[in-house]
Length: 239
Figure 1 (cartoon, rainbow, N blue to C red):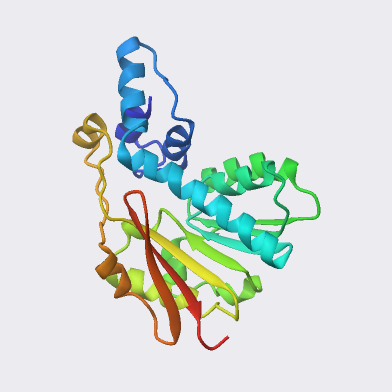
Figure 2 (cartoon, rainbow, N blue to C red; figure 1 turned 60 degrees about the vertical axis):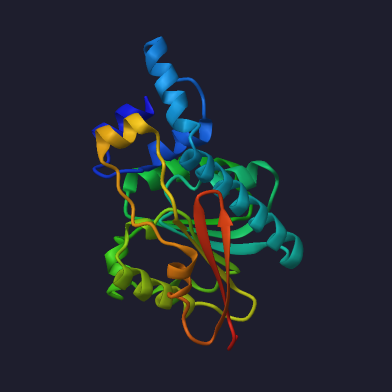
């Protein structure tokens, strides 16, 4: 099932929210025994495991910030299904404001339909904004107010170095004192053999050294690994 979705690209691009959800589920799915085995093979490879590890990291980070600061506000860029937000809420983690930005309307609807019924005294804002509009500053992030945590797990692998640097600088300008920006990028991408050969799914892979080159001036930063992904964590020095 996951291989078929990767090949068919029903949303017009690789790695859509439906693919991510199948990776999260990590079950045997398919119409035949062979299909189920192939599905499980792909969802259990190192790249799919890294997607699940990434989600767990975000859930724990949101939980830790909530314990530290009380009810927090979060902003997810390239949010997809926002599975980490859904999981955090089902675990009883209270969030004051949730803003999800994605250029896929269907992904945002999926996220909203699943998350909204669970909310109490939480503002949920879903914005269908092309990422290029953010990069070209056609949309002003400061209009959304302030956040405690800004993050992106599966977007920057698709952006050129120039766009990556520009968007990171734009996001870094939103960093007041104590606000954290974290960005993930695959360093190695070993999606299941059959899906890889059939779909030609390609990401822009970046090493820890390459990620560190995007650190804006006047910021504190650290690099860390989650599975096959390198993460860049940034805080402002001027907040």
